Image (tube, rainbow, N blue to C red; front, side, top):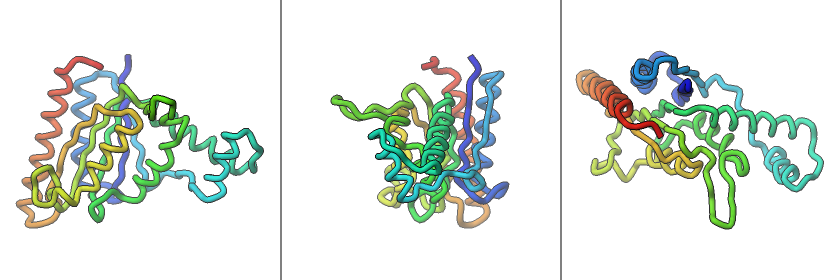
Length: 215
């Protein structure tokens, strides 16, 4: 079966984005390890994501209850449903995630808010919440000026990686791997060393994944 891989870009920096550069190296190795794999890129800074306005949110409750809604509200929820289905159609999702003010860029948060919908990305039953992304894999290429890895002095400021892991787990994706790229600010030699370490970490991760049995 052909592996479908989605690269979600959360950085607006284009070719200057360090997280994107490392993710591209990782993606190239993933394709080498899975010949025939198909990679699609979703650049959130140029994506036309639906706006979750007040009327749109109220319209969701009306649709669930079977009430009539305005055509434009129904069309927006059709777009949201299509965005969720698109995301869930991939086997692996690679995220380029820079840290902004200890968290994630607002474009990525908007995407997460768009697709995290009840009945679409998760459902609630008497047994609790069931994420509908079970069986998929996510890889976070997480960059930042601060070292917020567990045990580091700035670990308590991590609202980037831990948030992404918590959200992915909520929608059922528990096979999550992280490639850290830190620091992205400082003397050129320190940043260059961080890039080299991240490239090596990405290649080692793909090597490990290619040896692991398919889930």
